[in-house]
Image 1 (tube, rainbow, N blue to C red):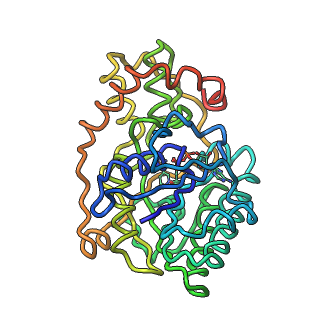
Image 2: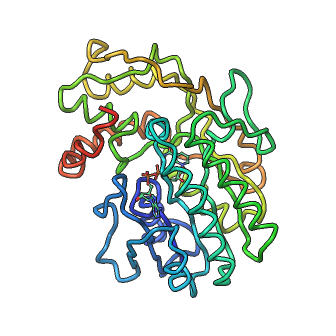
Amino acid sequence: MKFLVTGGAGFIGSHYVRDLLAARFPGTAGCEVTVLDKLTYAANLDNLPLSDPRLTFVQGDICDAEMLSALLPGHDAVVHFAAESHVDRSLADGTPFVTTNVLGTQILLNACARAGVGRFLHVSTDEVYGSLLQGSWTEDTLLEPNSPYAASKAASDLMARAYWRSSDVEVSITRCSNNYGTHQFIEKLIPLFVTNLLDGLDVPLYGDGHHVREWLHVRDHCRAVHLVLTEGRGGEIYNISAGTELTNRELTERLLALCGADWSRVRQVPDRTAHDERYSVDTSKIREELGFAPEVPLEEGLTEVVAWYRDNRAWWEPLRARAALSV
Ligand code: NAD
C-alpha cells in the first residue's frame, strides 16, 4: 500500500505517519508513505523520521493543482489532515482558513478524482456542530459552526461528501473531539500550559474556565482514522471521541498538579469571542459498526505528555516566537 498523508508534518498527521511506518495498524507492514506538507508555522520536520527509506517528504501546498496531478498517481489512499487549525487565528483572520481548508480540500479532491485515487479519508472536527449544553451530537446533527475555523471545516466536509457522490473517489469523513499528545505545537491549550508551567510562567485561562471539552489521546485518534480508512463506508461520517469531558478549569487543575504548581499561576484572561460552551459527540456509530474503543486513559496520557515536554525542550523552545499569538 502507498499512502499520501497531507499535513503529515503537523501534530496529528505526524503521529499517524510514524504509526504507519512502525506498522502499528493491521496490514501496514512495509507500506510506503508520502507526506505532503506546506510547512506552515504549525509544522515541524523534526516530527518525521526523514531517514526512513519508505517515507518521501514533499513540501507543497494542497492548493497547487499542477503539483498534485504529478504527485498523486500511484497512491492507493489519501489521508487528509492538512488544515489551518487554530480557532484563535481564525478569529483574527479567517481568510487562510477558507483558502486551505475549503479551496485546498476541493483542489485536492479534484486532483484525486483525476488521478484515479480510490480512497480518501477527510479528517474533520466536532467543532462543525457548534455548541450544546446537554446531550451529544450524532453524525446527522445540523451543522452550526461558530468560528471561521469551524465553518471552514464544515464547508470542507460538504465538499468531501460532494466528491464522494459525484466522482469515483470513496470518501469517508471523521469528526473528532479535541486531541492531546506529544509533538503538539505550543499554541494549543495543553502544550501552551505545560510549557509555560515548566518555564515558571503563568497560564492564560479564558474567562472562568467553565467551557467543556472532550479529550482524546492522539494515538487513539490515529487508530480510529485508520480504522475508518480501511473498514469504514464511503460517503459516511464517523464521530470520534473518548467521552472524557472536562471543564477547562478541571483540565488546568490537572496540569498544575502534574507540573507541581498551584492556582496562583493561573491568569484569567477575557473570554474568546463566541467561545463554544460545550462539545460532545455520540460515538455509537464507530463503536458499533467498526468496533472502535479508545485505549489511553486521560490521566496516563496527560502524565506522558507532561513528561515528554519536560524531556524535549529542544523540540519546543525554538517554537516560542512562532506561537506568540497565544502566549
Ligand atoms: P496542525 O496545525 O498541527 O497541522 C496542520 C499541518 O497542515 C501543518 O503541518 C501544516 O504545515 C499543514 N498545512 C497547512 N496548510 C497546508 C496547505 N495549504 N498545504 C499543505 N499542508 C498544509 O493541525 P493538527 O492539530 O495536527 O490537525 C490535523 C487535522 O485534524 C486538521 O484537519 C484539524 O482540523 C483536525 N482536527 C484536529 C483536532 C485537534 O485537537 N488538534 C481535533 C479534531 C480534528
